[in-house]
Length: 134
Image (cartoon, rainbow, N blue to C red):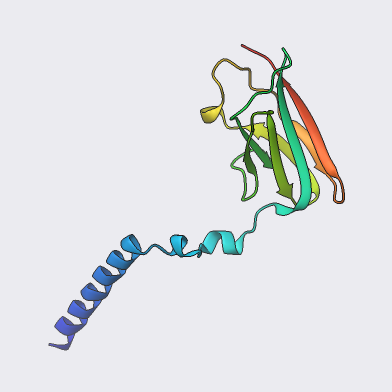
């Protein structure tokens, strides 16, 4: 009898947890375990990455990634270029690589090589990347 009650109680707890988890997810309440543990590269130093086509026009609406090594960008390591081709990062000072997500990259533009950049505190760090058509 006690075993049956324990199984029923555990099942009810699982159902309640499932319902609450789907209808009131913790990440929508401002709580996310992973970003609380790993702040990524977010900081106070500013890096401005500008994408310019070889004809002088800015390349807008392109995802620019920033990380200390190529791969999945950490928190604070993704920005989208604006109408001026500018993507702005607020990161910790350090050495990074600028790279691009091939899945979201314009199909008619050549993806440039990995761009190393050093971000220093107390100044606006800038890098301009010249883009060309395929």
